Image (cartoon, rainbow, N blue to C red; front, side):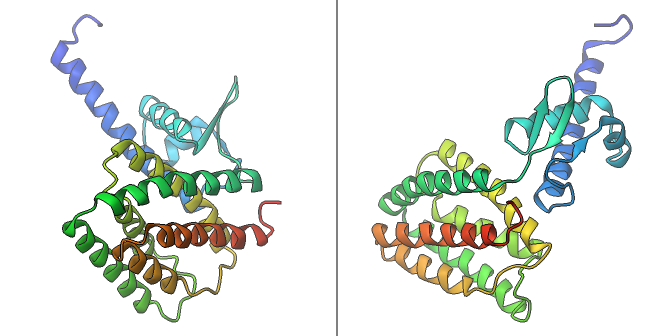
Length: 234
C-alpha cells in the first residue's frame, strides 16, 4: 500500500473501481447483445475509455468478466475483441441450451409448487400483454419484450433447485439472444411465437414433462434454424 493512503481509503477506492466495472460491464454486454458492438470488432482500450467514460482499471475488469462468459475474446498480445458470430457456435449453443434446460425443466415440473405455477401464469400474462401491444410489429425488438421473454423462460426452470444450473442456462440464453438481435437488425421472422409460448405454458402446468421438453426443444431449434437461414453467419 502506498504511504499516505489509509486502509479505509484503499478499500473505498477498490469498491469504487468494482462498482464502475459492473456498470461498464452491463453497458458493454448490452451493446454486444443488441449488435451495437459488432462481432469481431477490436475493442481498443483508449477508445472505450472515452466512449464509456470510465477508467482503465474498471474497463479491464469488465472486459475480463465478459471474456469469462464468452461475450469477448481475449487475444494473446492483442487485447480484446467482440466474440465472432458463426454457424458452428450458434448450433453448439442451441444444443447445449436444450440439454441443460431439459434437465432444469423436468426438475422444475417434478418439484415446483403452486407458487411456481402462479409465477409462470403471471410471466406469460406480461409476455402476452407486451405482444398484444405490438400486434402490428412482427419484429418484437423492444427491450420490454426481451425482458418479459427472458423472465418467462427463466420462470419455467426456476423450481429446479439448482442456482448453478439456472445461471448456466441464463448465460446461454444471453449468448443466443445476440444472434437473434443481429438478424433482427436486418429482417426477422414471421412466426406465431406466442402460440408456442402458450402451448409450452400449458404443458408445464399440466405437468406433462415429455411434451414440455419436446415443445421447448422445438421452440429453440426453430429459432436457430430461422436465424441460420438468414445467411448472416455463413
